[in-house]
Image (cartoon, rainbow, N blue to C red; front, side):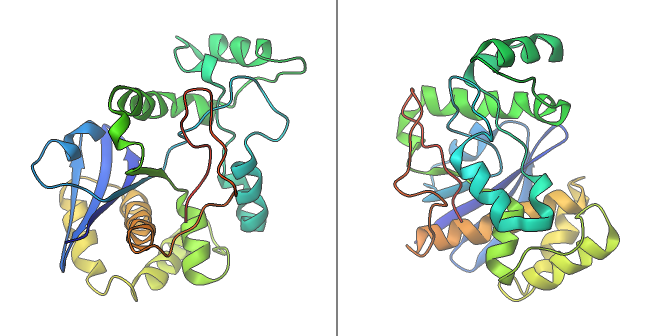
Amino acid sequence: MTRVAGVDGTPGGWAVVIVEADRRRIRKVRALSEIFDGAARLDVVAVDVPIGLCDAYETGGRACDRKARKCLQKRASSVFAAPVRPVLEASSWEVACARSRASAPGGKAISKQTYFILPKIREVDNLLQARPQLREVVREVHPEVCFCELAGRPMVYSKKKQTGRKERVQVLSQPFPDLDAIVNHGRKEGLPIEDILDATVACWSALRLADGKGRSLVEPVPHDTTRLPMTIWV
């Protein structure tokens, strides 16, 4: 029986949409490792966080980030540049910027948006370094790329706007006819609507990947120096 999850970062933890046979549910967890603690095995976990990281700054960032921006067109700004590995343990934004600049000639600082998600990136990296058996299970996705693949076009409106949330609900309603129930339960868990929708579309990609229909934005898939894949799956 296929069992997959879509995961999106949220304040205080992660929004997780799990599909097991015909059962769909959403929950909030504090640590991503919690979803692997049960007896039931997860086949694919699609998570919205950079996984494989460059050791040194590269103009334009990782190849998968460049490809994602090209796919998203006007929504390209939603793809933040992934930090370089030396930045992961930085204690402040200033230190993170200094390490990013020092990683290569012409190195640049990281954005504050990227710095704010460093704890989530570090958490997933630590999990995959400590439990290498999960490397084939946990896949990096980007919700806007997932929505683009599902709809056949980039989303028109920002997910922060009501029109954008409505647009994403319409796109998700076909593969998730019970979307209202997922959203309502997620709201009861204290999850923001945009995180619920992002976790749900990540789950859609996880189902595709488990069924052998998903793909990597970059082929062949490159790996970082710790052997983590540097790609976005859809």
